[in-house]
Length: 221
Image (cartoon, rainbow, N blue to C red):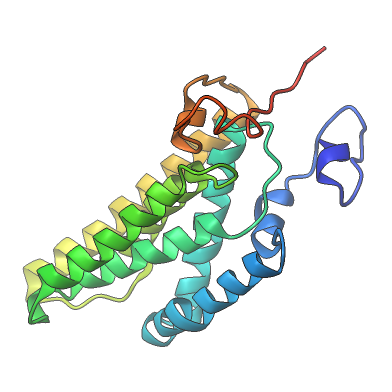
C-alpha cells in the first residue's frame, strides 16, 4: 500500500496506519480534467446548496458522504488505488432529492423535478459501470448523503404533528448513518471480506477483454 499510494510512509512498516487517506483522497484528483469536473460541480450544485442550507451543513454531508464512500470502496475493492470526491458528490446529489421531498407540497410540478433528478443519477450510476470509475463510492456516498441530508438539512413543517415527525426523523436518520459508518469500520478493520462478483458493479464486462486492465489482484504472503 505504501508503494502504490505514496505520500507519507507508515509509522510501523508492518502496519498500514494511514487513516487520513479516508478524507485526504477527497481533495486529490487523477488529472486536470478530473479536477475541472469537480470544480464545475462545486461552483454550480454545491454552491447553490450552500446558499440554501448553509456551508456548515453541506460541509458535514460532503465530508462524511465521501468518507463513507471511500470506506465502502476500500472494503469491496481493496486493491484499487483511487482518488477524488465521487462519494461526496453523490452525497450532494442525494441532498437534491431530500430538498425536493421536503418541499414537495409547495412545488407546482414535483414529479417532473423528481424524474429529472432520477434520470441524472441513473445515468451516472450506469456510467460507473465503465472501468476505473468506482460505483461503490457512488452508491455508498449517495446512501449516506441521503441519511445525512434528512438529518441536517433545514426543513419546513406543516403543523405540530409534522414538526414532531420531522424531529423524530432527524434522530432516526442520524442513528442509521452512525450504524452504517460503524458497520463499515468494523468490516474494514476486523472482518475483511472478499467479494468475487463485486467488481461487476464497478466494471461490467461487456466483452471478454473490456475489464481486463481493471482486473487487479494482490498476492498475499
